View 1 (cartoon, rainbow, N blue to C red):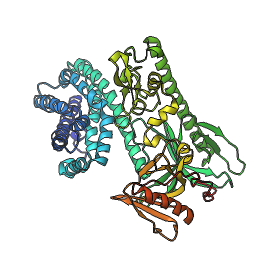
View 2 (cartoon, helix red, strand yellow):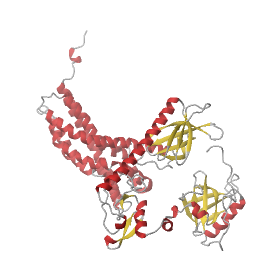
View 3 (cartoon, rainbow, N blue to C red):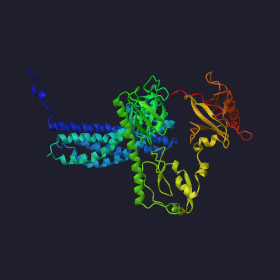
View 4 (tube, rainbow, N blue to C red):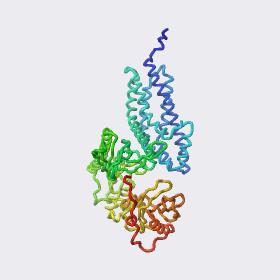
Amino acid sequence: MMPPASIYKTETNEQKLHKIANELLLTERAYVNRLDLLDKVFYCKLLEEANRGSFSAEMVNKIFSNISSINVFHSKFLLPELEKRMQEWETTPRIGDILQKLAPFLKMYGEYVKGFDNAMELVKNMTERIPQFKSVVEEIQRQKVCGSLTLQHHMLEPVQRIPRYEMLLKDYLRKLPPDSPDWNDAKKSLEIISTAASHSNSAIRKMENLKKLLEIYEMLGEEEDIVNPSNELIKEGQILKLAARNTSAQERYLFLFNNMLLYCVPRFSLVGSKFTVRTRVGIDGMKIVETHNEEYPHTFQVSGKERTLELQASSEQDKEEWIKALQETIDAFHQRHETFRNAIAKDNDMHSEVSTAELGKRAPRWIRDNEVTMCMKCKESFNALTRRRHHCRACGHVVCWKCSDYKAQLEYDGGKLNKVCKDCYQIISGFTDSEEKKRKGILEIESAEVSGNSVVCSFLQYMEKSKPWQKAWCVIPKQDPLVLYMYGAPQDVRAQATIPLLGYVVDDMPRSADLPHSFKLTQSKSVHSFAADSEELKQKWLKIIFLAVTGETPDGPNKHPTTLDDHPEPKKKSEC
């Protein structure tokens, strides 16, 4: 017996249009619930905590941007209009007129999407650094209404909503007859929504990139500062490293970003892949050379300012893909910087800049914030937290905090002290580079500068809390005998860390039989462990440190400080 013909009956076009309109309504209801969660729960609870003085209310406002306005628009206008229309569908089967009337209001998403990158970065940083912020967020995330999803996940929903409208409206127009009274309204709505969607799609791509950066950050032990919207992962994968001395191949892992290459060593992990970064090679100045090794095929060389690596790919195709990715990244990097330089040159032609002779005497034309993406002095990319935009009051250039950490008296402002860049500071004040060193920050003092005039200096093994031991060039300078400076190498231009020794407790008992010449400095929760290569070197350090922790300085000048030459470092392994 044949089944009734009605079973095979296909949907009519009218039914398909009704289905699309109904889907729009149902997803709009769910979306308004999510907006309520963001606006009336997360936003309000965090503002309440901010008003108690736990953290800045301004930061909370930056995170949620204009989410309250977006929520009002959808809950008070768009959703009620859709609810009413679906109830009247039999007599008024159309949605284009509603969307055409309300679509222009979707421009308010521009503000939210524009600040989305910075908002995600703020959430990450505040969660890591402010316990009260983290506590409020986690308490809300445990609630059933959150569906076991994070704040960041819910913050992405407004960014994803506009492309969803675009997709439904395109489907609606495909099913809508061209002679339909709703055709023109639906088409105009799509044009407006598509413009807004292009910005949202860009933000979604950035969000996906940010998620990947977070994953890599965790794989690297949360020690590499790579989670930055300006960083973009280009390629990653296993590679073999040829040792310089014996040409043995060792397993390594590469992460290629738009501005750097991370050369990593796999480390043991019970859960997921984990790596330790051995070298960070900047794309600036990098060169790629195809090499030929009869014993080891598929090799190529990456030569950077920091290090040169001879690498072996798994196949000829893998080698070609790595060389192509690296070379394209280098070319793109140089093109961005060339565009940046040309833009500055063009801007200099278009606008009369203050001449050197007029610096400080005539007010400059300020370069607009949106005209640059990186510091016009050091070329580092700007971001919301660690490298924000500042203007030099003398030349008008946009610079980062580090390049604007100077003040000079400007004649055009009645001789008042104003924030200026380093170049203008030196011109206006007449200070030379050597004189400028006197005002450098404590970490900016060069290793060679303090090592040559120190109380004691040598390589020591160093460990902070439970982190791995690492070798550091340690110096206590004569001009600052109560501070221990730690450098990566004797010629480094910047200290990695400093320890003000006053008040520390010294424990000179060895930590273990493996480290017989070790000692420890403790103060409150700070614990710093050191190990020397010999007992003699350990005692020389302790003699100075015992004085420094009590606020005393060595009697008389030390004409022969302990140096690397007195105690040569142990022989290195053939490969790092």
